[in-house]
Each structure stands twice: as C-alpha cells, then as structure tokens.
Length: 193
Image (tube, rainbow, N blue to C red; front, side, top):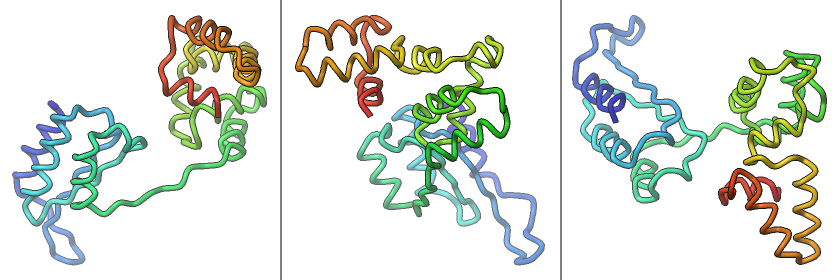
C-alpha cells in the first residue's frame, strides 16, 4: 500500500520535463509485479487511474493477473489497454540458462523451465535461490523440485502420477501431506502438468 500510495501522490504533481519532439508534458508510472499488491492497493490504484491528470500514464505489469480480485481486474481491464507478452517455450528457457551457465545440467535447466512456466525472469529468480548456496555442479533437478514443489523430488512426482493412475488415494494423500506438511493447490496442479 505504501509504494502505490506514493505513486498516487506523485501522479498529482505536474511533471517538469517536456517532450522535445511533441512539446507535450508527460509523466509515466510503471508498476511492476502488481499481483503482489493488496486488494486495498489495487482499489486505490483504480481510483488513481480514473482521477489521473491528462499528462499521467500508467503501465501496470503483472505475470499473474489471476491473483487480482476479479472485480478489480475487470475494472482495470475496462480502463486500460491490455498487452499480453508471450511466454518462452521450455526449450528457449533451457537454452537461455545454458547460454549463461553452460555447466548447468540439462535436467536442472528443464526443472527450472518447468516451474518458470516460460517466464525468463522467474527462471533467473529460481536459479538465484540456489546458485549462491550451491556450486553449479551440486545443483540437481531434485533440489529444484524440493525447492519449488514443497519438498517433492522428481521421483516422488512420478510416484504421484502412478498413484493417481492406479486410483491409490491413500498414497496420493501420503505424498501430498509429506511435502512441507501439506502442499498448496497451485503446487499440486503444477506437479500434475
């Protein structure tokens, strides 16, 4: 709420710079990772956009619009132009990781790519969680799975699939409860993909 509130306050101050080409006075605010803001902050932002002076423009960036309150999201979509950027393929993410750190194992890159869902920034974020703590050669796909899937290893993920296929609800429950004392619906869904 604090940062968004500051942006809203700043949007009311006329800009001091003039565009040399058009002669227009413009002010642009870029808010990144907006999905992490509270519902109250989203509502404040919606009010600010509606009441913005003509010289103010807002660029709202989110990777997870589904985390917004649905009513606020629809209101934002009605007042803003939505531009969707495409996600990279798993091969593209793996390639980018290997280009920068050739020593990374292919299965590690694949695991990072899986959890990043085509988002290069998220892939780097996942890697940055383990790279300072482990030497590159010690980073395994199981480490990535344990980190991102609530303690699940790749082998346990395969075991989950087998248990689901066999209809073994007891084993499915045991596995799910084992991972970090219970696993969120989002993590279970990502494991099943």
